[in-house]
Length: 331
Image (cartoon, rainbow, N blue to C red; front, top):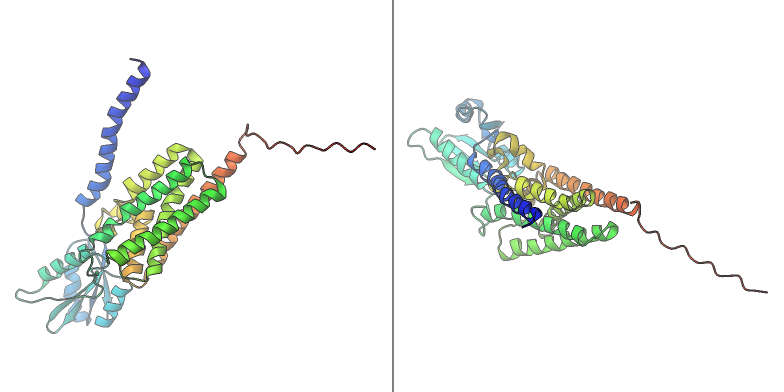
């Protein structure tokens, strides 16, 4: 047996456990460390009545970021604008909890448990879901599961563009075309068939398309600059890092403190936040995640263009033959 196949065999044996460890760490570590970190919530009512409510939230240091509102109407508006995940209104009958399960079913349940535990014994806590998840996805699990397929679709798009040696305008056209069709297909499935999202149809299609374009453009751009290793690097960044840190199945504020914010600057996290805003909150708080995805897409497409120019200017590239000059006719 030659040395080269033996080394390859050893490399495979050592590489697979390393990949398994990285994947397990990326996906299991954030899930195992779910806890509130500066979760924005509100209290509404007279200062004298809300003081105890605020103190209840502040019993756990750094768990909640409490905002004060004058009345229930202001608290509802803040929830609909995605400024807070929920709010507690002080009433004569006791605390009235306002939640938004569409923003995060996990946080909504967390608030129910926290407010019920703080309420005086025998007090019934009234709960109103201001922005509820649609009937087709009451637990919000379908939306949470949609980010991995989007990331995989984007990685596949970028990889195919690179492996098929598409460059320049053809590469950009393939990325845009694939992203647009993926957006239309995903919206038809999620909105019309599964009925798990309920916003503006075309806006949702735009979100799906932009998500695929951001991931696909990044993968294709890295491949254009680094060659085939760029495909692997892009896939790891989007699938092994971006997806588990997206917080879409829970909330960014429930992930370990340092990585929750990081995940929102990667395409999977930005895609999840943007889709929630468009599908459930009439586009409120959509600007930052939309800008994040646009930046990734633009940078990826720019890298594709730079890679094409570098390839065209590479030494040794055969030049087009000069046109032959016809001999002048004789007398």
